[in-house]
Length: 175
Length: 287
Image 1 (cartoon, chains in turn cyan, blue):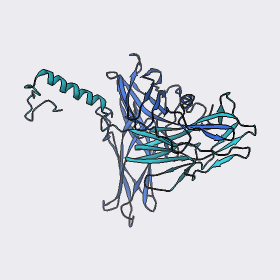
Image 2 (cartoon, chains in turn orange, blue; image 1 turned 90 degrees about the vertical axis):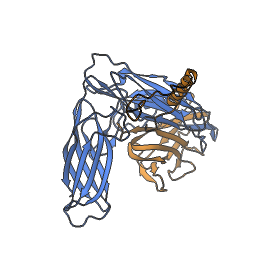
Image 3 (cartoon, chains in turn brown, purple; image 1 turned 135 degrees about the vertical axis):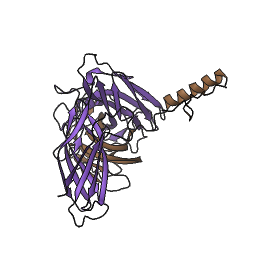
């Protein structure tokens, strides 16, 4: 490290001629900036949920949303660089406030796909299996898309039903 | 509740499931107002002298995000085809060097407004008498949008599917004397039309993960290079690692071989993050 030294190696008297108030102000400003700014070399991962599954009609026959249906499939964007491990944690059912599950959710092989940056092609995968993919960096997004089926148990549906679709991203390249 | 996906047995991902229990609502209508939490760095290295680190979280989206911090045990493993995954569990099997019992995070929850930056401090509380070696965990940064969803009416029912994301940050703590090395047990290579696939069976020595880079190149009989590739790799225990080397030109003539080198260096690593170890070099004929 040569910080704080002149090119000839002697210690540099930074700001020695400035008033001490200004010096401490400059120091505080630098410190605040350093604390507020992450190191530019530090790799980051960003996961951005784009949309959930959009069911329109639920009945005993069920409703299937194909992973190709861009307007209704679930979708996340993942940005970063290097190898990542992707898991989906998916619900079996939509629950209501009483904890009963009148609407079953099913995710079959092929309901999961990803789209590489710059491509329109779906690469199909099994949502029950982890995916190992390389993120391209350069702020480009990998698109993870998910279809699925909702099927009611045949009871009359009323009330609020909810569930969570979770994408777990585990960088496996750096460590 | 609620998963049908437990590919590695019942202990897999229970933490993620526990995080799912938090009834945060992100919305259903397309498109959602985005909540996108950036997490950096993606790996944290701590030791006895430096027992705390920090994660920087930034809400890059345009709605508030609720963030929750948890811990899990896991490290990169591979299957017979060299596919690498990071199985995660709340508790580690006996004999595994889990850091989870000694990890703390402050704060455990936060709400980030759009554009807001937050800091999470990670602290290791390992006892001094802990056996020398490296201990592993993943810090799980779970986020979801904090705004109420737009509801979807289906008949008389209202359906809400929340979208959540979890980023698992590798956290390695080095206690006492640590050392590492890597060796190549077996290597094989086969050519396809546009690439050569190198498959390495790697084994780690010492008491810490070997973190480094595999560099490989396809060479002809006259030493000409037909393609090269470099990949970061983390060897926690035995690992089968595949490298695809794209070809710059077709393989004509022959025989061809792959020269490889495993070196403990990472261009983006901080000083001291990567443990020193001997560089391992070798070659394997292309089948």
